[in-house]
Image (cartoon, rainbow, N blue to C red):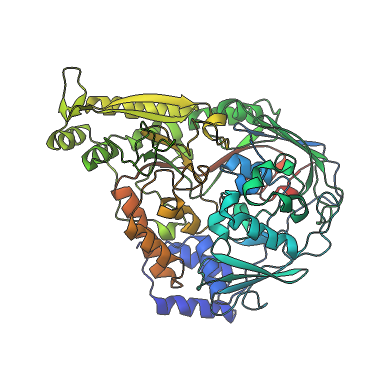
Length: 600
């Protein structure tokens, strides 16, 4: 498990924090020394009745506005601005310009209030002793951008909206198994059917952005996509919506009635989309044309060179994000009831375990780290890597072309005159897709070359990022449709807990035509034992036992080659030298946008 501390010692340390003999920081450092990451250590304290530390406010400006235009660059631009439909980071980040949750996650895994007056704790009565209820007190006098008051009715509405299957919200998994009730106009209670070890999912962070009842209540369920406000947000955030060109540009102007004093600092924001990661890095680090650029998926050697221009800096933030290759368990080439990659089919080639095993040893992760990603992508055998507490120590990776060839040979895949293996009349030919992005095309080339030597023919397909990550249900080339054999991208982990992250292998999360491909299980893999383990994690309050369950689940999906992890993807952003912005690996890049400012 990577740590050596029994329950008795753990409880002893927590007891010392309670009586003031050990500081919170001291406790977290002791935990980190034995492999328990900071976010989980802080959650341990909260579960044990120790109040969360309130992050110190380091915001310097003494008045609202005056900072000019904040120019930010997302080389994959947002395609819609309803957080409940945000299938990718770009849409979540774009939505967060205007919408806010009750609380966000800071870089240390601590909760910072946004629309909540305080963070629920055992002391303030917010967390029940049995782990089944969480009571949130809301800030009063918060107004939606159109001047209407924000109240508990809005919070309850978001629960009703997201949990309705006909809405086809990507947030349904967060809301369908809880009940949210209004206690009074500024108090809500979240009720769980059983003890919830990780209670800060609903209403928090990326899954918690709240939309206004008065503008969406006529667009519930099947009408959800028709709401005009899907493309013209009215939120509570620091900026008022100005205009939006999907995939290209989002603009906002200062909210003069923002609910935090002296914020925001900037008079307006422009979020530019499109281009590529290298040009985005150059626009911040070399030319200084932009203040911030997202997701620097650029070879580290290029970033280091651009930093020497002196206009900006690269910030690397620990996350649980993972660049990985997915293996389709269904047949993408056959249509059943108007649907390709249907769960009524099985993959004609990848259903053979030997082919999956061979592919897993044909990915040269060390070379991919060394020659492409550097500090921005350490190689890993695991799908679940952080917080470190949940990282499996049993998984290993290797690169071995001869071993791959031997596995295939023994399984009856024989080389033809063209060097491509075949079995039962089927050629070992597969289509491997990803988004257009230099490190990804280089990774594809490395994998293709190795596969070819082992007798596998990989056809490489590159899809424009704005198309690949689109939320458009009519688009055949989106990653959620998965109309090919293998695909590669980064899955983000937006919380310091694996609950939501690991639900992407649950059978009930399969992406299908019926749910408009909004289910999070893109590989379509279904496994009853995995489902059972996941259900156990939902109510296991013992942190050590719960971590063991997640580690077992990681080992199942990696061991069965449902996915092949490639490299860990810490958050890598480019910031102008004067920009002060706190980036968190556990929330959206724009989670704390209200507090961004420039040093004089």
